[in-house]
Length: 90
Image (cartoon, rainbow, N blue to C red; front, top):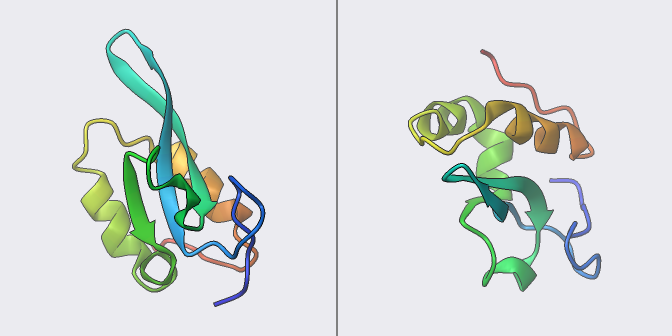
């Protein structure tokens, strides 16, 4: 796994991809997926181990698709920020 700094604190290496909520609009929770270290544990709604994201992306996408709050576009934007070529099959 390539080293990638946390997008929240910028101090440590990212070890997870977390969904960090930012607002509630019309009853729906908005937010952003960010590559993080342990600094966001109190603010994240959902997290995925970075190794799992790298090695099991299609399985994770299928799992997340079952979540009402999941926005695939925002998730894939986070994947594109990771400094390697991670591509879903679907």
